[in-house]
Amino acid sequence: MADTYDVEFLMCGAGMPNHGLKAKDIVPYVKIIPNSTIGLIDRQNEGHAYIPVN
Image (tube, rainbow, N blue to C red; front, side, top):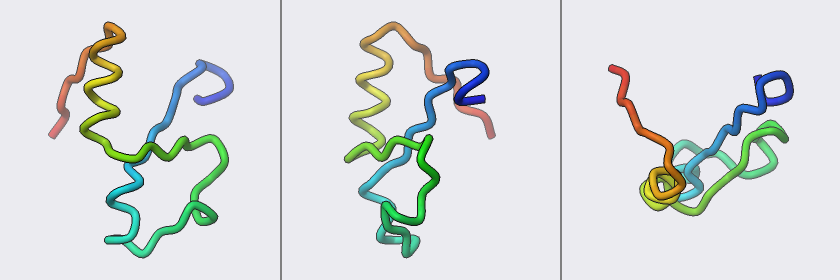
């Protein structure tokens, strides 16, 4: 999806230590951002909509 549909995958860097993850454990097409809340706000400011799925 990242290549075919230009989908961007973001991961919260703040939560990684809680799950024992390091940057080297993450596949290359996933971008690690410092904080998911700030990342979400940035995307909403760019015009994207957040739709929670439970």
